[in-house]
Image 1: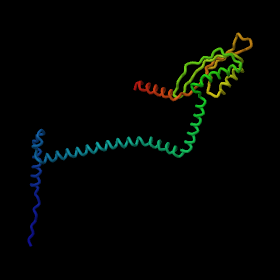
Image 2: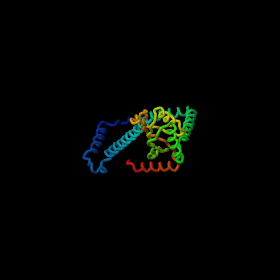
Image 3: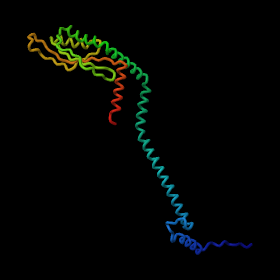
Length: 232
């Protein structure tokens, strides 16, 4: 039986194909790529497609890397918040107990603050405390009320004269009043014109009262207005 052998392509055919391919890249006009032969067009399109794919890939990877770094930077803060909240959750009962104790303490302090109507009686109690210890008042002058967020402060300039121990007893009586009164800037000097050794004391007594709901609202509105006017 006769067999036919396929003829292998000759070197001349390959050389001719390569020469034809090279000829397609000669004298290409870059301003008219649409008129190029098929091989240069396919090659250029392939390179552009590869460049677009590679550029987009690296761009996406860059954004993803930035997001990853940002999330990693948040990790220590999130861990700290988790530990803090875990501690609070474990000690929730104890924290609630402390909260109730603080609320009771604040309530007791509020009861020691007089209201507007009780201020006159409190001033009278301070005056009577000095007279009861045999002190002579040379000055008893309430000053301007200073309004804070939740309370008002009334400074009182006082000047009394008497014996040293009586002044000490007067200060103790002030501290033991049912309402909160504090003494500040105390200055005690001897009275030269008094041969019995009397002393003169100048001080500022500060007493406090709670604000009613209307006054608290006024303070909040004033703070809000001041915040709005503050430069940003």
